[in-house]
Amino acid sequence: MKPHFSRRNFLSTLAAASLAPSGVLALAPSTSLRPQARPGSAKPLAQTADRIIDDAGLSGEVSFAVFDLNTGRPLEARNPTKPMPPASVAKALTALYALDVLGLDHRFETRVLAAGDIRGGTLHGDLILAGGGDPTLQTDDLAALAAKVKDTGLQSVTGRFLIWGGALPFAPVIDDLQPAHVGYNPAISGLALNFNRVHFEWKRANGKWGVTMDARSERYRPAVAMARMRIVDRAAPVYTYDDIGSRDDWTVALSALGKGGSRWLPVRKPELYAGEVFQTMMSAHGVALKTPEVTEILPAGVTLSRLESAPLTVILKDMLKYSTNITAEMVGMSASSRRLGRPETLVNSAAAMSDWAREVLDLRDTQMVDHSGLGDASRTTTGDLTRAMASPLGRTALRPLLKDIPIRDEKYRQLRDHPLEVVAKTGTLNFVSTLSGFAQQSDGSDLAFAILTSDLPRRDALSEAERERPPGGRAWNRRSKLLQQALLQRWSLIHAS
Image 1 (cartoon, rainbow, N blue to C red):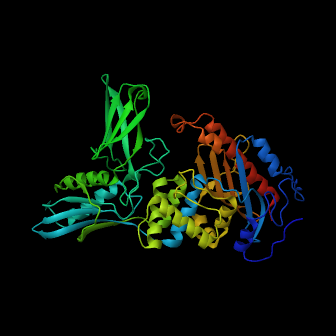
Image 2: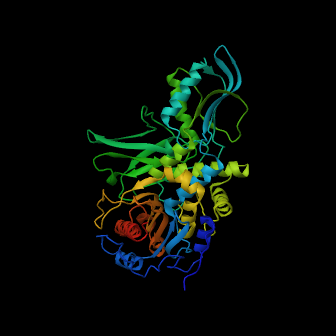
């Protein structure tokens, strides 16, 4: 017997739906039933969800939930209350959190302060570069900031050059289980430059290798000394990292260099990185600064120049499109700082976001350890994710920021004339693949959905050396994405208006 759901508002309806037995939701058939073709349709009958999942041959767990936004009713689900890793779909929750707490038009600010008197173009005191939590600050921005300082008439500084990143608590990495050299797992601070990544390039000329480490952006590529690379004649590991106090010290295996190339490496000392680049930019204007020093306490001073970020909605749209981990962490931690009235560590901030999700969106089974989904200890459910998407904030503020997801056939070729339009957030970890968002057809049918797949035993069995390119990982991920596509196409057939 099917459980009955009243015509209450869609949030409370979906809340009740998340407690329904696996595979059955109100006013929807069990996923084991075969739907009938719509009258006049030449399309073949849709497969059952159970058959689609069986045919995918995907090891591990599969969960999904689908909600009708027009009627405010859940349609069908499988394991909607099973906690699973969200991977980067977590960024959609972080976006909702930031939009609610900080506001759509929030902007982050980076400042240059003068702590002392300026007489005759000389600052008799300290110059301070103060971060304000902007995750999008680039080398070009620091160049513009330096030009603004020069325009004030400043010619020299007698005191120290201080760097402050204390707007957010420091974390050396987002997730300590990731390989040391991956650029998507940098340090977190209230001052970040180039997504806290340094550009490493290697070239061979006249039988010798040359390496560079720079802070390149669109217009500038200043070399940096706070990150050093040495080539070592060995087979493995490819990279090693060592913290030697004032510098990020890297080595790379000679056998891995090939004919030349480049990659972005994570920065572990973000304040010193930004400080060195700003020092270079000021030097280009004839203003010599002392070696950057990190300060934990922001001194009082007069603002000489400031730079505002783009509005939060622009930052979040890029974050959701490119799945930028550091943006998610800095934005989420900034929201927690605003909500709690104090900066919090990454883990505590993620817990604060989980509390917010429970209080504001009624997400009962969501417990995050970060804001990006990089840590696989985070958990949520498809019931919770679908409820978040179906919320007023999800429908009005988040939906326009999500990226288009093309519909593809069984060979993963794009179907350009398919009537289903999907916007969603994807998520990928080793043996974890996720998707959540909205699906709308030309006939007006409108769905919120979530799909979570994972094989955690297989993920947990990976050695450290296997984590960047795990054996079988690409094939597993492809099967999961084909499964997601098959489910979307099923829903476009059986849940049309």
